[in-house]
Amino acid sequence: MLIANLDLPDAAYLFPLSYEREVKEKVFSYEVLPSIVLKVWFDILTPKQVMFFKPAVEMLREQGHELLCTSREYREANDLARLKKIDLMVVGKHGGAEKSQKLWQSANRIMKLTEIISAFKPDVTISFSSPEACRVAFGLGIRSIGFNDSPHADAVAKLSVPLLDLLLCPWIIPYTSWIRYGVSRRSIIRYRGLDPIAWLRRFPKGTLGRSGTNYFPHKKGHNISKKTILVRMEEAQASYIAFKQPTGVTVKMLDRLINNLSDIANFFILCRYDDQKALILNRYPGKVTVIPEIVDGLALISQSDIFIGAGGTMTAEAALLGKPTISIAPSSFYVEKYLLSRGLIVKASGPEDLERITRNLAINHNYAAKQLRKATRAVKEMEDPIEKLLSLLTNEDNIIKLRTDTKNAREAR
Figure (cartoon, rainbow, N blue to C red):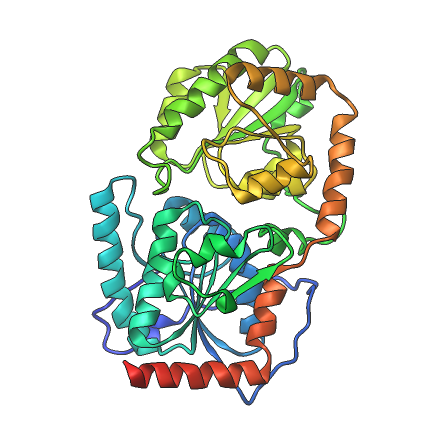
């Protein structure tokens, strides 16, 4: 992990440290273009983005392109990057839940990034619609490619989508959801897949989600008959739900479940923030286990029997792994609607409904096998978003056009 030091006299510190990378079987092979080396800036802000962009970062580096990967101080993303051996330059901080702090930290990060990116001079910026990356790229005349599967995240979309040169998104999101933010339809590229495909497809067959760590040691103990239920708390500081007291709603959903089903299940809670950990530990003493640190999410899901998600990414991940999955997300969105329509998840409408659904799934011995078959069919039909990105960045004509467009935009600024 690198921390940006703006006092250094040159730009040598900008490049991520080298690390020994395990030799992995590659899913896609692209022609190396040694005569044309791209300078690519990735802004990677969340755990999902670490998993999503990791394949592209590794493949582009192997082809000899120059990469700069930035992030911000955000525990979950930073710790997962270390776990996945992605070197990030940390620039600025996460703004938290307060509007004033979100504004201050974003503005501060833009200023720091402006100095760093002015020195690096990338040909293209790639992000998951990072407001700071989009603003800096636009201001410096750098072509910007952004992914986004969350038009319901209104604040982020308003600050990023209009500034993108290309917006890539799942096919289930209608063009109108983006056009209302000011991007033209011809700038939108849709792929027939959900974002977790970017990392789910890259595990060798038969080893998906396996880890040397046993996260649920009770499975080898006397109460092996109990179901293992993994609960993921919501992204309480996201701008689209941060001011709606979502954690209070989530724990009210969980109260009845944990109190009434402890005889048939062991509950493990994966929190995002320290205040969520404190709340869960105080509310359910001795009844649940709070996962204390960032872990391999795929292994965690794979070792559980039922997944309950109050967010988006891990719910989709669990569903595509074929795990019995229940959504208790405080809002509805396109990805969730698609998963519901394919029967890959069920949605609980309240505490009583959550208890009923969970109990039924726990005693239905055929349900897990049925979900696995559904998920396998769905995944086979999907397109890999990283393949779509790499096809844009590894074609010689596209590289030349990126260079020309960036040069013209810089001159226009």
